[in-house]
Amino acid sequence: MKKLLTGLFAAIAAAGVSLAELPDAEGFVSLFNGKDLTGWIGATDSYGVEPGGILACQPGRGSGGNLLTEKEYENFILRFEVCMPKNANNGLGIRTPAPNVDSAYHGMCELQILDDGGDQYTKLKEYQYHGSVYGIVPSRRDSDGKSLKPTAGNGSYLKPAGQWNFEEVRVIGSRIQVILNGIMITDADIANIKGDGSDTPDHRAHPGLHNKRGHIGWLGHGHHVQWRNIRIKEVPADYKVSNPTDNIPPPGFTALFNGKDLTNWKGVTTQEKFDNPKVRQAATPEKRAEMQKIADEQMKAHWHIRDNALFFDGFRGGYSLATVKDYKDFEMYVDWRIMSIQGDSGLYLRGSPQVQIWDAHNQWHIGSGGLYNNQKNPSQALCIADNLVGSWNTFYVKMVGDKVTVTLNGKLVVDNVTLENYWDRKIPIFPVEQIELQCHGDPIEFKNIYIREL
Image (tube, rainbow, N blue to C red):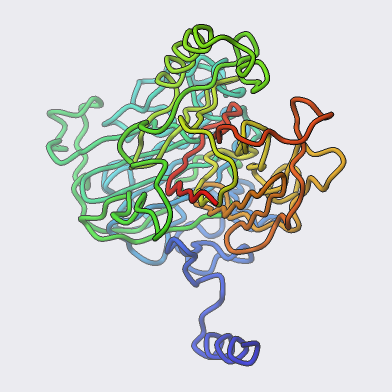
């Protein structure tokens, strides 16, 4: 095998292709090599590379302007992380014909990149805020700054200035979607917008609005804006974000999520400590029914179906999701993806925390999958096997008795370790209890949840 891989890598190198250009498991390739501006054209004198593989608009080096991909794109999903100082302004040009044109008008559009929680931006037009299709479609701006972890303020779903944000942009045909830190802030189909100024909120002509193809790039406005982990996946015009094979169990397994609704799931409330299995087990049937009704109402408010995945909206201090059925010994698969930098979640096994899910790359630098709440037995993952924020991951979890084994993306991260009883350290883990998808104040998605009882 080693000889085979060596030969494969040699062949790749001989073809002039770097490993960074190879697609990942989802088909995304990097647009930025972290070293130089290879693959980019336009205002290369105003952009540069900073430590940590960061691409930055550096106004002191030049006059700003458009830095575009050398390649042109038609339909795609773009993922990136962006960080802005207070009151910074930039843009994302879509299907732009050339570097020296105004992407907001002669490209398909400019998607605004703006620290719109800044004090300079309290009286903008609604189509000028972050994530807006500039001049045409306003983005969502209804964050109260309390329900989610701290945001930039002023209704924005950005994190405070100076912090990294994760963004996913989908441009497929005439539809444009922007997901910012897990929240869909823009979802627009511009097919029926003329673009001649007669039906656009800014009353200006957008002659490039219906461009079918063009460059992608950053539109500098004299501020120091940074990007990293820029990656793209080209897709056909009829592409569907959800895979038709999602949520179809492998032989011998049962799907706990059908991709359509919350069948097989119930809410978990923290009221009266009803997230504690000991409290639930000690309650009367009538009390359990009363509290379950409250939990289910909370569940319906914050757990939704998006692109055939379970989506938790990140409600701060929110409510976990639990299987209707209790389980003893089992093996299961779970796909998950974190939607925000330093995001946090987990799996409760038999009602107890937890198989850890978090942003291993930007916070603790410890991999997901570890039995976080253990005190006597190992609690950390054996390695970091996590994909980048915004990318899907796959857990395999096996639990027999009090022993747990976990693989993450095919790598062993927990090897037959005892899961301790968080709720009562004096006794072993409960022999039979529910499985939970933990909420931790961060948006997260789950799909392909399969289980087999042993």
